[in-house]
Image 1 (tube, rainbow, N blue to C red):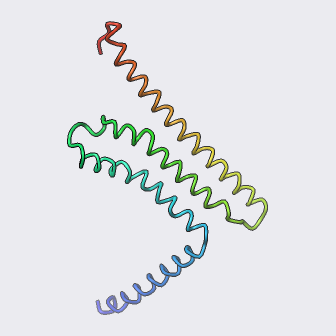
Image 2: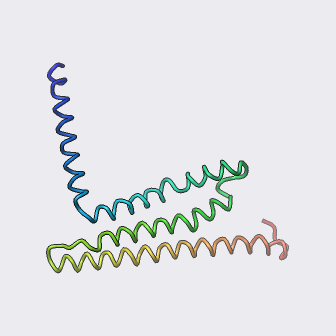
Image 3: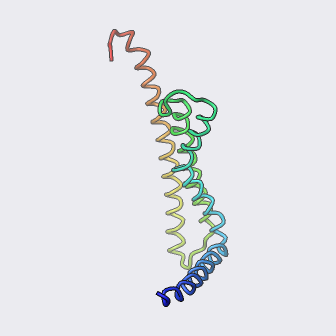
Length: 152
């Protein structure tokens, strides 16, 4: 038991020393300063944006179903995909200036970043357009079903 107590401060010192060195190495790289905020935007868009909007909505408007509210519809259909697209674009922009050792690896990096930019743009646009079409379809079904005499 006493030997374990003696090793604990040594473990803490080693852990903090290696953690400090890792942080210094990461902060010395200029690409890190550009990529870390972009990763923060993506994490916020995935796990923090909708709860924040829901909390703000609940502070001002105390009624109604959250999943059926226009605030949720706009936030999840348009704003969240735009935040994700912004994060992916900022990551690519942050990795652009990184120079790799060989011309082949530099070409692969350039192609990969171009692919990620294009894919994120296409996916964000497709998701937003799909949600828009689905909302329009639901609206038309609600307005024209009673005209045709069809019940749900």
